Amino acid sequence: MDIISQLQEQVNSIAATTFNVFGTLQRDAPPVQLSLNYPDPPPSAPTTDEPKQLSADLVKAAKQFDALVAALPLSDGGEEAQLKRIAQLQVTYVFFFKELKQVQELFGQAADNCLNLK
Image 1 (spheres, rainbow, N blue to C red):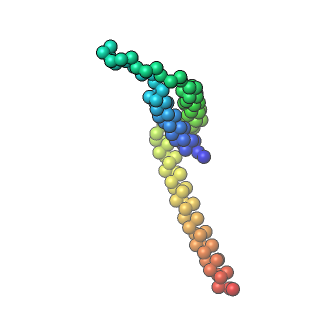
Image 2: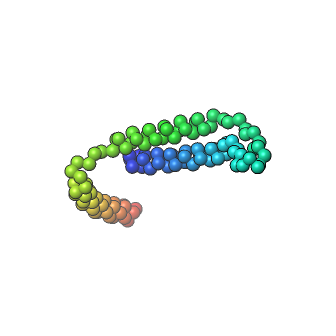
Image 3: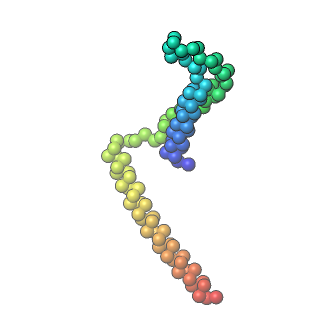
């Protein structure tokens, strides 16, 4: 898996963990008395270790994301050099795509010849 895909996976992991943290906080937050005119809220249930685990997961995912970003290659020469490199890669892609098509056609012809010999 390339670095960009790994970065996307980490972003998805961070987002999922963040949503879980918010959901857990909403679910487990102790009740609050909004006004002195209302009765005291009922006592809350004892908290679990889930928030600690979710926090650790979030920190771990963030550190992995930072490590992946640090592993990205530096761009030498700025945006112009990157655009030039992309253009070179596109030319190479077109060349190999044409060669692949030729090989596929030759393979198809060879397969047809083999079938005709039987």
